[in-house]
Length: 472
Image 1 (cartoon, rainbow, N blue to C red):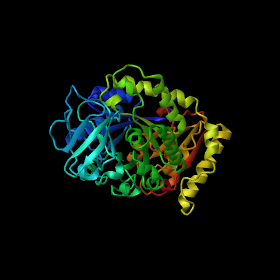
Image 2: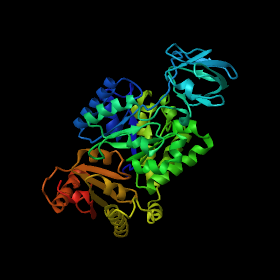
Image 3: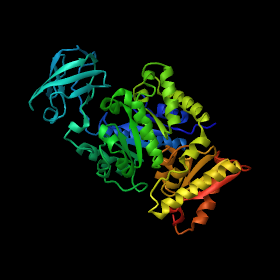
């Protein structure tokens, strides 16, 4: 069985060579994520161009996701060897670039001391080191180490999102947006989103004329305003790292399932991210708990699962990706397709106030039922924007879904899993001033056995989206 859940892999120093990128793509990477919080704009654009070049050489429509830094607060360096912060010690917190020590932590955010208040709990790095604000007068602060540990490098300092006065996207984010939109990036992820307004501030052309905009749900405010964020976004990322810092750790599994469920009800693709195979940064095999985490993310309904540091700085990025691919494929095999689709029959992706989406809902529901009852092997979805593919994919039929579009960005997004689940992708040449019937006829050879997407003797079902019926 072909793996249906897609994989997003973060590209970093361990994986940005042409040879490693080639092996990652061959191993099944669907999306290359560029974490713009690390490295300069020029370095990130160079990685972007390298991914495009290798993908073109292999003939694979690999999606590229530019992940914006957002209002991230970072500590000044604790040095490569690290500093031990001892529980109950009192430490000075200040703004500046001087190296952090066991007695003074410097941060890079000018407004921090005005934003925090006594009683606030701050977390360093992955949250294992916790400090409580004891005194804060706007120019200096004293914190107590509530939970100590060793801190290395330049870790992030997690401040409750509702305390931060800076908004997202930040001025630096807009510089990245301009550069990557000009380069033709497929997807943009917005960090520390608190409401739908933050997504609308991105200001890019709607997809597919512009990149698909992904909201990273990693704040309590985002959870509280999830419906508005879903309405404003093209996709959602469950960013469990900072979300786990904002919320009680025992709430995180429930929040993950709730966010995924509401995205599916809203017809939005959803990525589950952070620490999925974390131990493989330095080990050649995952823990049993990590393997179960990936599988459960698939069964929850994730469109894609994501690798972060595992492929960016890990000892063997290709091995990590192959491992995740095997786990996801095995989970796909056990997925309850019939039960899942029946659960969705009463849910609609969009309001019936708009005729086009309601037609798409009805069409794809009927297509799923026909494909199931007739034992159809392939469902061919022809779509300009990817909406029809997304609507069909959320039913998770046993049949292969082949998404076909004349828009290259739509093809990349479909292939990346951002049009849903269980989707293959294929581009067809743009035909201007041609009726949609000819577009549909052109799509059939695009999915024939020569491309390995369907066999000549197999039954197939074809669905054509409203936008695809217009001249392409």
